[in-house]
Amino acid sequence: MNANRIIDMIVRQVMRRLINKGVDKGFDMAGRMGGQSDEPNRTKNGPRPSQNLKQAQRITRQMRRFTKF
Image 1: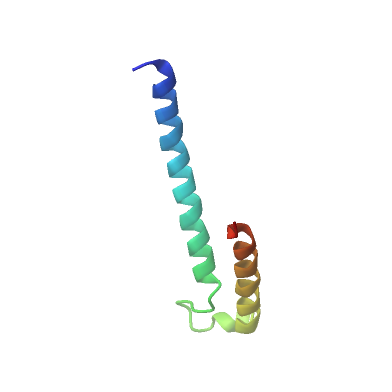
Image 2: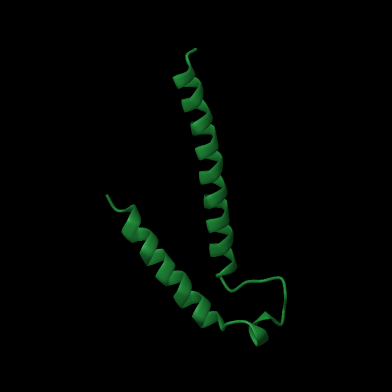
């Protein structure tokens, strides 16, 4: 194998790991916006569920805009 193929292989592995981490973080963040949490008194100190819903809808619209071909 030549050096170019080795470098390409390493770059692909690094990019795949970075993209997977980014996607996982995005799903975690979107899951936290759903309004469901482990803490029962979360609504007292945090944003209202309606605000979470509006924010999730806004992010969904943004994601749809970028995924259209």
